[in-house]
Image (cartoon, rainbow, N blue to C red):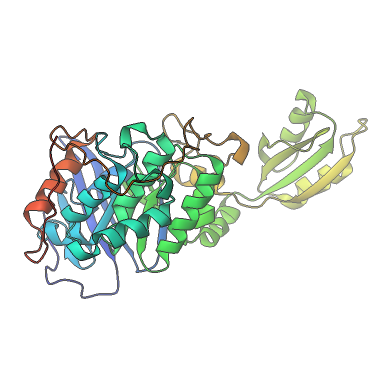
Length: 395
């Protein structure tokens, strides 16, 4: 693998990826991607299932080696300076690796020690991340007792406890209810004022609500990179369209008539208010289509409620650059808050941490991701000599 500078941060970019390849036998998961991310940017990383998102994130966080090209984080090469990269990056994988037998407070203290947080600052950092992620009420509970929503919060807390320069988040709002999603969005935006954040998601509102920039990857290639406004402008040029609404319910006859209008290349029903129906028309001749819509269908009395230019959507952007592919098992569309994943039973639990909580056993740590455990072990072996390890009692 070609490598970059190993002399530390020398440029403005927080992340630099150049001609990055990853092969699994004859299969090329990454086909030579390149991009850079500046400090303070919050970047949404989108792509269909198997596009290369997680592979890229694992390479950036030193959980996987590349087959070729180079990548650096905070100026350190991920191949030659993995230890330095790990000190400067926080990672929340999609399936949060947590030690179920540990109390939340003790787990965060354990991670703080492994991440090289000075002994005198560990409790301060634990309190800070607990407040930031809304964990204060469950700090004395065993992780195995927590709902999925709170487990996700613990995962986010461990990713930022060592104050990393770069934060990599894979589906950070998985399992959260609508109110919690908004809270986590606010956390991400707050952190992003000073840190660099790259995160993947299949919930498009996450991107529009949080991101400064969008990178779309498809089949191992970067197919789009820009701000939401820039990508919307490209879609408007590539897929010009109109939105039309009528009084009454949608019918096959109405759909057929709209499909046959001059210039129309595609029709999709996009809902509408009760008692009405709304369609989006893809047309390369908006003037001709607009005249036909205003004239109405001959011999049919139908009230036209609205006719306007179609605004580009993130769904349209994604469809344009990926050929309509979606995440496996998940629809890449905007969903109303009422349809978002509800909080699991137990999210309302209130627990106060006692003055002297029982130390958790770490003899049989139940991590769900062996790679993260290995990374922590490596970090523990390479902690700064000035760090004073804090003893965790065994059961």
